[in-house]
Image (tube, rainbow, N blue to C red; front, side):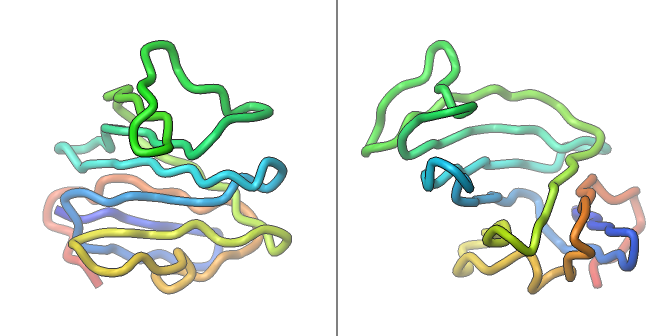
Length: 127
């Protein structure tokens, strides 16, 4: 399976059945991690981990404090994930396949706007 990424300037496909997106909240300075998996034509949000809480970062009902982070399992399905990227904040981190996490910009450069992620249509090869 593959994840297709697109900005207004470029597109890329990355081989991945599952991945984690991580970032540091720009105001609260708290790490946020979301574990995703590709299921057919959608992305499924499997797990959220937040190392604290603050404005707009309240743990969901039923969240459990585990190893210093609030964790919950939304299991919501998304046709597209839109990530706002800015030159004024650190980039998202992409973590997959047991490899060290790396900035999303290592996969696709930011255009200073929105980067869309979606499950690639069947037959699209990773680049």
